[in-house]
Amino acid sequence: EIAKTQAELDAALEREENQKDAMIRRIRIMYEKGDSYILDMMLKAESFSDFLNRADFMDLIMAYDRQQWKDFMENRKYIELCKEELEEEKAILDEAKAGVEQEQANMEALIDQKNRDITAYESDITNKEQAIKEYKQSIADQDAEIAALEAAIAAEKKKILEASGTVLTYDGGTFKFPLATYTRISDDYGNRIHPTLGIEQFHNGVDFAAPKGTAIYAAYDGQVVAATYSNTMGNYVMLDHGGGLYTIYMHASALYVSKDDIVVRGETIAAVGSTGRSTGNHLHFSVRKDGAYTSPWNYLSQ
Ligand SMILES: [Zn+2]
Image (cartoon, rainbow, N blue to C red):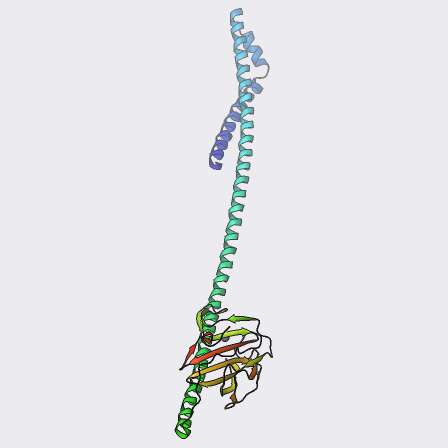
């Protein structure tokens, strides 16, 4: 549009130049010849009809001059219109350009933001992978600790059996609930998605959320295999009930029994806490049968 208007303006300006030249030539002739030019011409008429012809001719010349002047003025008006249109078109173009530039700036800001997000996600993924690795390692450590205790007990039992011929046996009775009170099961036994790591992870016991200090009971008659501290389990108690059956109580704030103590069903052995790898006061209660975790609900009546 701008190129088209510019071409029209150029043509009009050229036309104006030509009109000016023509008018200047005309004015110069009139000036040089003066008023006498017309008078001379009229007086040189050879007859009345010649005089009339000459008068008509003068009319024609004057009409021609007037027309020239009118054309000139119209052309000038047209030049003004062309210039105005150019201004308008340029203003529209500038506005469109500013809009595009703003859009581009917004887009670049958005790209910057997205790049920062990607960097943050990448570092988050790295942190998470590290956390998952540590978490899996801690679970492996915990399993190894429990398995080692069981192996030690098995070896001891073999010695006792060899010496006396008697051994602790589980008679198949129902467990006592390991807590007097609890607010809710915060995490049940089985496979579940880890709340912060987002990976599927086997949960080897039942978590009971309970206030700090709540009494933890021995679920059944047995002997204390461990009453100690570990990084992941915190203060924990492991009881041997005979027949390859064990119970484990984790994250305690206090322990009331010692290794090798004999305990009876319902005896207070520890108090609820949040020690070790724990996010709040709760009892993690696990049951082991023949060297593997089993659902506590097989032994507990809710
Ligand atoms: Zn747990």
